[in-house]
Image 1 (cartoon, rainbow, N blue to C red):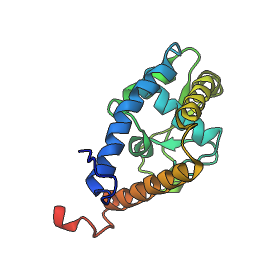
Image 2 (image 1 turned 180 degrees about the vertical axis):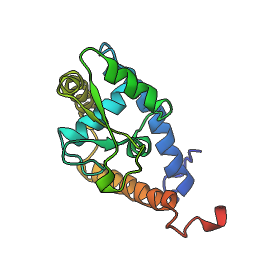
Image 3 (image 1 turned 60 degrees about the vertical axis):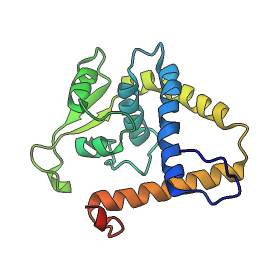
Length: 180
C-alpha cells in the first residue's frame, strides 16, 4: 500500500506493511549469509540467538549466567520460523561435535520441572561465528548509504513497536482491547 504523496502524513499501515516487506526481502540476504555454512536460515537464527546470549551477552534474550536460554524464550525471540524448534535443537545437539547442549529445568528460577534450557557449545560458537560476521558485513553494506540520523530513527521506531507488541502478547496493554 504505497502512496505517491510525499507531502502527506505517513499512514500507520504503510509503516507496518513496510516492515513485512523488508522482512520478506531480507530473507534473500539471510539465505546468502548462510549459504555454504551447512545451516538452514532457521538453524542459523537459533545458533546466532544462542551465540548472542552466551558470547555477546545480549540483554534482550533471557538467559542465565552460563548462557542457557529457556526453550519458551527462544520461541518468542527467533526471527525466523520457531516451528520445529525442539527438532532443530535435537539435531544440533546430536551433531558431531555437538553445537548445542540441553539442560534440565532451573527449578530455583521458577521454571516448570519439565521445561528445558539450551545453550550453544564452544564448537557451536566456532561454527556460527563466521555466519554472524557475514551477517554483520551484509548489514553494514545494506545500510551504508543511509544517513545515521535515519538509522537511529528507524531503530527507535522498531524498538517502540516491539515494546508495544510485547505488552500486547503479555496481556498488559489496553491499546488493542477492542480488537480482541
